[in-house]
Length: 429
Image (cartoon, rainbow, N blue to C red; front, side):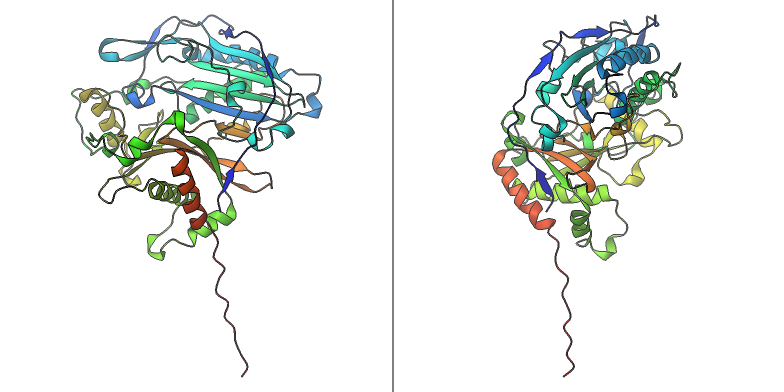
């Protein structure tokens, strides 16, 4: 079956220095920049965590301190990505804007008395020791007036380190954050400027004048079903957090169940169909209840949409176009930035091609794991992962109530079990 990555109780101590603000290394423009009408929607007004685990590089032992390298490179990168050093403010009608104050990014230096080997299965999303590896600085988690990024770099006893980050999601999506991390990477390697220069151009995703909704947007549909089975059962504070690994065997088992008439399906589509079905069954949803699946779509590269923040989507992929995106921006203005529909919904982001783990901060070793650190009750992500057997696959963190999680695991086990092919026995009689 798709293996649930479980972890025994981890006990280790972390010694943290006082949080500090890392400011741009040089003076930056003092200005106010508007976010787009898609950026500042209600559903993106939260902080998203990322975690990356790095092994020791024997060639760098005693030569480079990851904390010092990353702190200095961060300050240099912020010269170019200076909006990240600012603070969000609200204008008329709750319009979000970045006040480019240059106050800086919140940074924590830390040391842990443990090793990567000791962490073992904790090197994954839903890491049980995450709060130790990214300290929630009191007062830093607000959307307005707080640092837009919080970073903690924790040295490990083995010479490796952990890079953990929390990002205000209105500022960037996964690929956008990776671009900033690559800028830090470039500066750590001694480049005079990032290899990719940032371009703001958020106006591309503003509403038209006059705004007009030209598509059906089920992802923002107004739903009055407050008695949803799924909605009533969900409570992030009383839920079980687990990660599920899908290797070649599990993916093969799922593909063998696809009807031949379906046509080509990506691995992401196969996995999401499986997880969504198991999740829906686990909730024992009433037969007449509507359930939904939404996913974040990257439209980078589409003509006229070269700069992008993902949107929630649950229609055919063919629907995704510049007109569709513009229609979303118009909807945000007309309907007052509605939250994405919640009853019966499950939202997933495909991060398998983002490549957080490829960032080495100039220290010569890629991350053992780099990606999302948490799932929420109705929000998850799919990421590339190598298990302890060395198998390449995908990992999906899931957050569910305890009894629902039990039923989810049972159904997932049934769906991902490989069926032995029937053997034809012949006889010479």
